[in-house]
Image 1 (cartoon, rainbow, N blue to C red):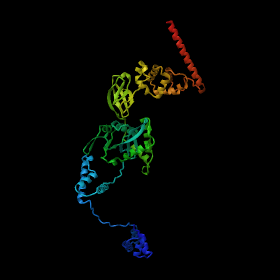
Image 2 (cartoon, helix red, strand yellow):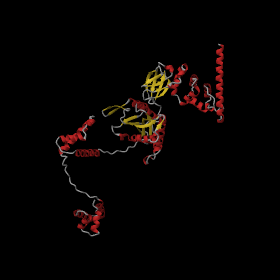
Image 3 (cartoon, helix red, strand yellow):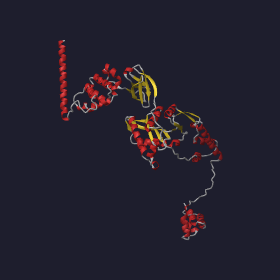
Length: 524
């Protein structure tokens, strides 16, 4: 690059001739003459200082001339344009996979007898595509939204370690346009039930309903396209009528029309699940997600959102009234099988054994099933999305197990009760299953749960060293919340001695029983 400052210094300060400057800088004498002429012209301007500054800061301009294309003659260019227009027509007709590639266009040009390289065709087509992209750029106008007026909805995907396995879940994200306040729900599927439940959960959490909700062209919101018009799904119409909000859809491939939530999906997913990936239940994952959203709604992420807390509170105050929840479920009827279960999509869910052969009504939610018989709720199960699964509740089979206690030990129902209940059975009732069944039946009739039995076992029963009977647990269940212990707490130094005394007493009782049985046999 020519250093104009050096040329002018050598000419003006050192008093060198043009030929000497050219020889010293290894430049053409005509170039030196041109720079000096521009310098002398700048001195004659009205503002010499400004002209000199402009001269020294202006980069050199080279006249390369308008070089004509020697290979890409007009006939070749016309043929390439024709092929590209044909590709555009095919894309608009749904024939995207049958468009010509650059290689196909090159082969066509060569077959017409023109001598041109593949690189020349590619460079020319790239230049056309670049010009088209640059000419297609547009400006966007930042909008202002009144508090509580607009809320945007979108789906996102996240992968979590659920119960030891890497599984895919879906995020339903709501973003309020005024404050950028966010709320998200976690679901296993992106279906209609999840769509409805997400709205119900958001309105319940916000204790209000926005005036307008904005959606893209998701299949759970748009039933069909009628020209430029979009027909909403029945689920969206039900939600709109029940909660009294309006809705609108974005244009195709116009994500900026709901730009708040487009970035919110990525932002919430990163903040909530970039560090914590493992959860044992969906409820735990949802609780963590809600805490993260509430934390994000309290803090400002940039200078433009430094008053986010005030804007978020204004959004909540301006929402429409929230009255009650809408039932977000599908209703179906099933007949109870001989296993005392209903079979839905290859998975079995237990009901009380008194309903074998009866028809029950099932409310199907996105994550659970609620089973009714004659208007009374009889069972609640977590919903399975894979076939071949069995959800068996032991309390549903107690009436049958009273008559068949031997079936308890190897039953699937026993394997699905909490581990603490299995431990109590294995330690104290493995040889007396009927007493264990009667204990569970007693707890069911008196409104006690597995948690109550577990609490009694951990807080009271484990303090004694003797064997625990069903009658003792029944009595302890009625003392929940009381501070009085039915058994004195055994000190650690006396525990070993107490165990030996108990074992000796049991052996003595067994020996007496054996003697009595032999005596009775001799008399007979």
